[in-house]
Length: 182
Figure 1 (tube, one colour):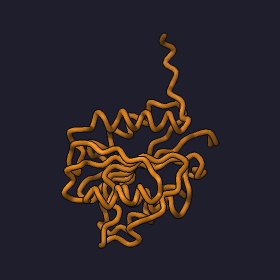
Figure 2 (cartoon, helix red, strand yellow):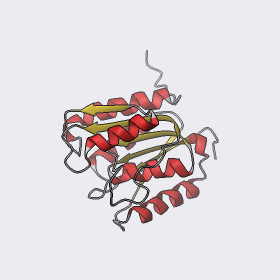
Figure 3 (cartoon, helix red, strand yellow):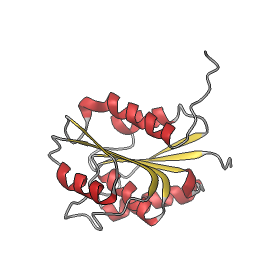
């Protein structure tokens, strides 16, 4: 295994799947970078956050990826999975879309997000995960939050989200694939 390989683990939301629009767009974007392996985790077998967290941990263990070479990207419940994973094992990056944080029904709903690079993107009009508790959690942890005029799915902002993800990967030091074109 190439020890320089960056592993991007993608975690979908409760009502979505690994083939969903956002996850597939993030995966396709990640795969344009050099030495990146993207893993879209399939959480559809359980609606339980703790089970999904275990699925993420199993996928990471199976990959053999070192924490310093891991980027976690998740949407909604998948954002909670990524944040919680980073609290247990600090990673290179955590990219969270409308993360299900600070919700009363989730275990450990306000994890300490431990990653060298973090970006949270949330919609002002999110009616599933209220933005203000997420903003407050980010403020407490001094994490960057980008608020967009969009709802929970960030459907109107997909192009912007993918652009932010590419910029995030570059900030994390991941190199773009050299196409040889000038």
